[in-house]
Length: 94
Image 1 (tube, rainbow, N blue to C red):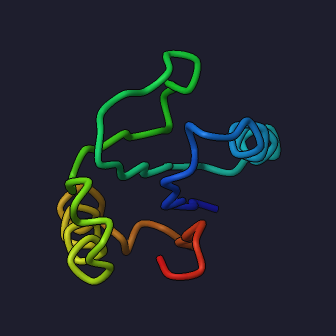
Image 2: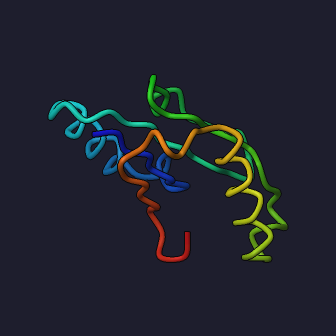
C-alpha cells in the first residue's frame, strides 16, 4: 500500500517520525510532504521518504484558502496522486 502523508507538523514532533518508521517496518510505502513557510529543517528530520517544501509565505498562514491552494497546486506538480492508495492530511483543515 502506498500512502502520501501531508504533514506540516513533521519537524515539530518525534511522534510522526516514529509513526512513519512503524509503517515502513510493516511494509508500507510512504511519501511525506511537508509544506512550510520556511526552509529550516533539523537534519535529524531528513530521510528518504520526506519532501520538505517552502511553498507559501508566513503571511499566507493568515489567509487559509490562499495557503492551502498553494500547497494543493504544488502537491499536484510533485506527485502523481493516482499512484497512492491513501492520502492522509495531518490537520483537520488540510
